[in-house]
Each structure stands twice: as C-alpha cells, then as structure tokens.
Length: 355
Image 1 (cartoon, rainbow, N blue to C red):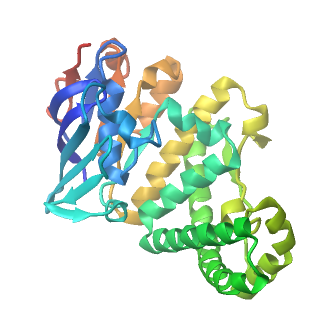
Image 2 (image 1 turned 90 degrees about the horizontal axis):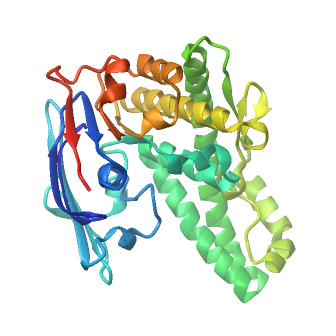
C-alpha cells in the first residue's frame, strides 16, 4: 500500500517531523545535511523492519536522546494500516501494526518499497554475499514460503556452525544435517524459479532502456539438488567444515553475477556502467514485485539527479511513467522541470527541509 503519512521522533537529525504524502510524485528537497535521506530511511524501516544505511538500528537515534519512534499510515482504496517502529539505546525494538505487537516477519511484503540509493551500489560492486542478501530480501517480499524456509535454514545453519566450533561428535550433526538439507533444498528450488522470473524482468527493462544498446543480465548458480543429495554433500564436506568451523555447502554459498553487455560488471564495469546497471536492476525489481503481488511498490529515489546525466535520467522517467507512488530527494527543484515533472499537478507535491 502507498504510504499516506509519517511521523518521525528523535530520528537521525529530526527531533520531530511529520509529512503527508500524495499518491503521485513527492519531492523532498533541501541542502545536504537537512535530513532528506532520513525520511526515505524511515519509510524503508516501516516496510521491512531494517534500515538501508546501517545494520545497527540504535545508530539512528538522535544523538542526545535515548529512543526513536517512527509511525506511518498506509492507505489503499479498501484498507488502512498504521505501523509503529521504535527502539532505544538499551531497549529491544518494538513493532506494532494497528496497535498489536508483531515481529519483523509480519512486516515483510505488507507495504513493499524499492530504494535507489548510493548504499545499494553494493549490489553490483560488492561481494557475492551482498547479491545473495539483495535477492533473499526481494524474494522474501513476494513469497511467505520463501521467507519461512530461508529463516528456518539460517536458524539451523547457526546451530550447525556452533557444533562445528565445539568439534562435537559426528553423530551430533545428523539431526541438524537432516533439517538443514530439508530447508536448503526448498530454498534452492524456489530461488531457482524466482531467478528465472527476475531474469525475464531484467531482460524486458534492459531492452526498453535508452536506445536499447545496453543489456544487463544475471548469471546464477541454480541448484537442482534434492534433500538426499544435499545430505551427501554435507557429510562429504564434514572434515573440511570442522577445520574452517563453517558450513561450506548450501544456499548461503550461492554466487550470482550481473553482466553488462556480457562482461562481468563487478570486475570490468566502469563507474557509469555500475550506476546505469543499478537503475535497470531496480526497475526490474519494480516489475518483479508488481507481477508477483499485483500491487505497485513505492519508489524511493535518493538524489537521483546527482547520479545520472540528463539524458539517462530522462530515460528513467520514461520508464517511471506509471501510476505508482514515488518519493524523490534532491537538493533543489530546478532539474524537476527539465524532466517534465509538474509540481502543480494535484497528484504531485514537494517538501522543503532546512538544516
């Protein structure tokens, strides 16, 4: 559902900030340091329970305070949902949906967002773990079964790795190997199918971007193993795992690579190619979520105009001419008119933040 309003208390550099968004294009503008990105971060936090800027949620708390709170209202034509997320420096996080206490798993997939931010560049530039995390988050957003199997897999993996560090007797591993193989094959099977669907979306977006001379593709290591095959692999790697104290077999070791016109992007891509590729990947993500859920996710574009030249930005906006809520941060309003954004239209609006 699109976000209707948000209230942020002791969040980053905001003591208290309230905003009410439109269903169209929302521009948040102001000089650097005015807290524009923090608004996108708060919306992202309400969507999936995590920041896209830090893994330590307590770092978000405004320096002189002890706790932050974010409240959001999400609206559709038929439904209204209120969410609250709060956390203190020495307190556990608290999440509520319509007044009832819930966990992070209850947020996943409810109000999907897509973030295009400098922090997301690790998807193309980072290590295989960055790409695994990206796809695990995306596929969990669109599939409850994927999220449950992945969660079960990582819980079991944590226990198995603990046994490896303790160098327990081989027989102690049998029940954990059984469970890990059961969850692992389920994750592999669903990941394989979803990879195919994402690759189709990536191909479609690439073909429609600019003059069609850019093709972003995805190379995957899709596994077709069944439970017994994974069990055999786990037992065959047992001695190696005891030495490294880590499980070397399973979905947590899969590798994926993005290709830019058939060359490995992470190794051979220029700065400009990485930027273009990230935009195309994010637009494919938009298409993937919409196809899987039937609903358009909210787009969060952090300082888009600073990342792409005018021609390439225009190509992005051609692809974004859909009926979807978009929230953009920028240092001023000048570039917006050049891209044909009419802030006088009833479905669009702007917010000015000051330092």
